[in-house]
Image (cartoon, rainbow, N blue to C red; front, side):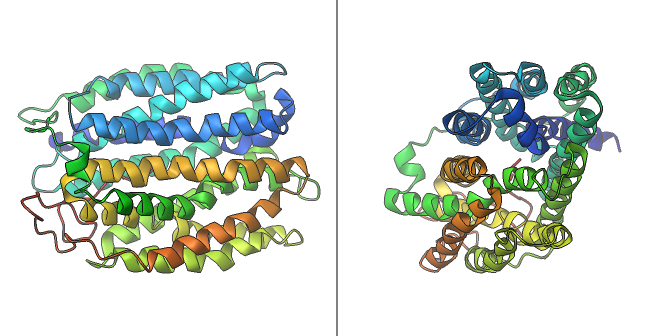
Amino acid sequence: MRRYLPLVCLAFLHTIVDTSALLVSPLWKRLTLECGLFGTSLLAVMLAHSLPTSLAQGVFGFLRERRRMGWLLLVGPVVAAICLTAVGVAAAPGRVVLVCGLFIVGGVSVGAFHPEAAVRAGTLLPGNRTRGLAIFMLGGSLGLSLGPLLSGIVVDRWGLDGLIYLLPAMLVVIPVLCWGARTREGAETETSPTRRVSVKEMFDGRIGFAISLLVVCSFRLVPNMGMSKVIAFTLAGPGRGFDEQEIGGVQSLFLISASVGMSLLALLFPRGWERRFMVACPLLGVPLLAVWGWEGCPTWLLIAVLIPTGLVLWGTTPTMVSYAQQAFPRGAGLASAITMGLAWGVGGLLEAPFTTYYHDLGRPQLAVWVFLPFVGAAGLAAMFLPEPDSRTGHPVDGAEPTPELNADSDEKPKTGS
C-alpha cells in the first residue's frame, strides 16, 4: 500500500487541477450577464478560456522531453486554483481584460501541470505503467465531473463571488499532496531524455501528414470544446430555466459518461483499431449531436442523449493520441502534444465564433448544426489516414517502440482534462 501513496496523491492533485479548469462550465450564462458580454467581448473570453490550457499542454509536453520540470507539480495547481477561483470576484462590467487574464494564466498553469504529472505517474509503479496512468487519469476524471457540480452548488448559494471560498482548502491540500507525490523511496520519477531529438526527426520528415492529422483531430474536437457552453446557454434559457447547480449536474453527467467511455476503452480496446475508432465514432456522434440542434426537443431527451454522446465523442478521444504516438515513434511526446493539446486548442478556436454568434441571436442550440459538418468531415477524412508504421509496437528505423492503448500494453498515453 505504501508504494501506492505517491500515486494516489498525484491523482488527487490531478483532481484539483481539473476541478479548477471546469469551474466556469455551468456559469457561462451568468458570466455573460455579470460582465455584459456579447459579440467580440464574449468571443474573447471564450477563447481566453479554451485556448491557453490546450496550447500549454503542447508546449510543456515538448519541453518535458528536454528537461525536468518537477516544480510544475506544485506551481501549476497553485496558480490555476488562485486564478480560476478569482474569476467570480473579477466578473463585472468593464473587467473583461481582467477576466481574460485570469483565464489565460490559469489555463496555462493547468496545461503546464499535465505533461510532467503524466510522466511521473507512469514511473511510480514499475512494471505496471497502465495501472499507474489509469489511477492518475481517474483522478482527472473525478475533477472533470466535480468541477461543474461544485461550482454550480457554490454559485447558487453565494453567487459568483463564492468561487473564491474554494481557494483556502485548495491551497492547504495542494502542498500536502505535492509532498506526498514526491516521497517514494527508490523511485526515479524525474527522467530526462539521453539525446535531444530534433523536430524534423520527431516527425520523420512527414510534416504534411502531421498537419493532416492535426486538421482531422481538430475537426473531431469542435463539439467537445463547444458543448459545455451550449449546454449552459440552452438550459439557462427561456422555457427551461435551469439554475447553475442544475446545469452543473447535467454537465457532470456528460463528463462522467466520457470517463466511463475512456475506462471501457482502456480495458477493451483491441490492438490496431485506432483508425477504425477515429472513423466510426465521429460518424456515430453526428445523429446524437443533431438532437441538441432541435430547438423543440424535450429537456429530458436533451439530457438523456448526453450519455451516449459523452461515451462516443469524448470517451474515445484517447484513440487519437494512441494513433499519433504510433505514427510518429521518434516523437511520441510531440505527437501527443498535437492530439491532446494543439488539436483541442484549434477545435476551440473553430467553435467559439459560432457559439458566440448563436448565443447573441438567443438561439444557442443552432451552433450544434455548425458543429456537425466538422465532426462528419473528421470521420470521413480519417478513412484516408494510413495505418501507422509502428502499429504492432515494433521500432521503425531504429526508433523506440511507443505505447499502445490496450489492456495488454504496459503504457497508456495521458489524455485531456
